[in-house]
Length: 287
Image 1 (cartoon, helix red, strand yellow):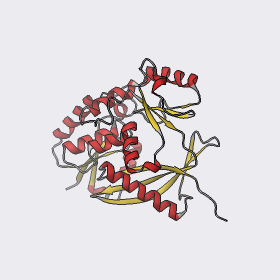
Image 2: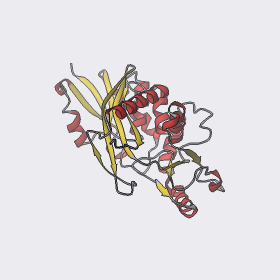
Image 3: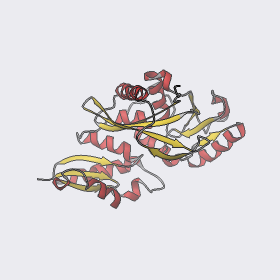
Image 4: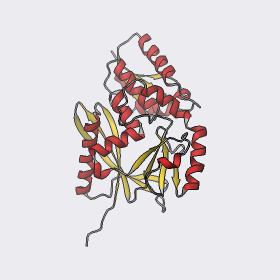
């Protein structure tokens, strides 16, 4: 009997990907929610999408082996949430929300890796005097607590840019923020996060140096690294240009980066899922 997998937002390209896996003839891949509603929509009503997906899965007549996803929010959170509901292997909803919530994530990083975490603070873009919340110096990055693909992300050099960015953010932030708040309502947000929700922002210092990401997984408590991929930016160190593999980092530095990634994932309680962690630093040339 074939094993049945559901894929959130399955499209023709991703269909070709999953059908290339080893022993693909033993599997059947089924779409779960439409590509248009989890990737291309103007808004993402999280609870509505959750209930629709749950209903589709419960109506399926065969045992379900797993749920897959290739996309960012809301797919990333729906995947964990549905996995919990159906007893399927995945990271927990709470662990994923810790990673997805930029401020909560930075708090967890600060606790686990204090020397590796940039300075940051939370900003309510709808506050009467948002400038008073800013506790770090310019230049800085200003980003929504929940977004992706650089949506509403701004490099800020002064007060004027800060206020203009907030004006733009207030008009668009609810596209992801409202949906993310629905997802957050399904877990207990700790007191240290406070009232910072999906419609808030995070301001953080701009880090310099070379950047890389660990591609790996945590499976039944066993940490694996598939590779370290360098993130190459433009000459101003502002915009992403490409990924490069293998990494140019020295082996000793790579080991430290991998160890830090494992420490963070264990601190968060992240397990049974692939992962990606980003790091930045300076490579010093030796004589």
